[in-house]
Image (cartoon, rainbow over all chains, first blue to last red; front, side):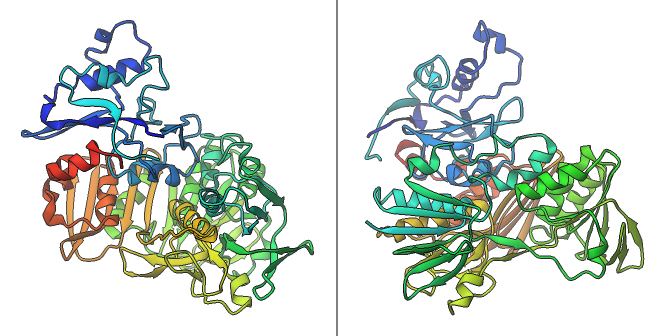
Length: 147
Length: 410
């Protein structure tokens, strides 16, 4: 089965952080995105970079995810190609942060770990970060061989 | 149909079951579980005491895990012996189970030194299993004075779990610092201070030599009164089954990268096994959960006729106390450089152009990037390591490396 994933075109990324806001809004219960203004947000995608290059990093949904094998609670599992976290089981030990080679996991506002689940866990249906990117600097598509 | 037997029912056993099933959907799998419980997340027992989880949420796999994987689970039954010639395991209930491939996932047991007068102590516990935590929970009161012998990972997590439920906690250790197996003196001092600020008392470089009812006599001559005693001195790998049949054993059952023991048809994984520490470049028992699962999975694949190797095992620990996160990985070998910032202390160990190990106190954001530099043996000359010491970032890799990481299937 070939799975769609989020891929990065860093040469087109302006570093505008709109993906982070779209992510935070998709996973919050707010009437308007503007309600995020002035608030510290906890997105599951993070724009990284320096003065030369920027790019948005979110979970790679690895073929053999190290986080799944490392989670001491058994809270992270891969199902139907998506690496998901059962936040109810997470105790916040941060082992997944220690092992993820991409730096894709970070705690949410409540201190419990959260991660990109490709917006399958909210009402969007497709990754909000990609939908809202004005520059195709992140895309949601099938690439390469897969499991 | 191939017959698989797994002795043990912890994380390594789960990895083994999943490894076998990734290759062989048909073979019969028998799992011997000494504890009369389905697999649960053992490292969560301190979080259980702390109230951050409960027995239901501690289930490490779904309720249908064994059935879905076609496993026969024998609860409350352990292996008494192996006959490698006949290819059978005998259980403590007198059952003889034939195997084509056997995995030992027997874990480790608490090491209890022969303290004088230990038999006079009424409330004494190890802190290893859920049963230990439940028994401990039964005796503690809001006034209990708890003495924990051992300032390692187990002893200190126990202290954190108990803090809000007892009157006071004293931790003693013969070592002169906390977490002596993973922290150097400076880092340990930071962690100790944080624990003390959160109400834990320490007696370090000192340990109990004798017990008399509710009093511990210390090596220094001091006495400590207590109501509840927790012994967290250390653990020993459970190697007896292999030793008895003349298999190679050191501190753990010796395995190769395929998790095969010196005895044909017998594999071992998890806390009972002694594999190879790729950061140290030497054999070592790496008793941590991720390695148990990966090692178990590797064993399972090979038992089922596949070909897998676990050749990048390193020690790595992520442990938090009262909101302070500590991460360590690899070997503290080579030149040490330090990065400090408000509330964070990072130490990196570099040798021959490679990151060999690190200690992070706070400042753990995206730390897995550091871990990957060790596990994947990334030449530091190929990245901007100086910048990444301040904060781990994917920006320090070359554009080509990033294209592979974020533009392809990984």
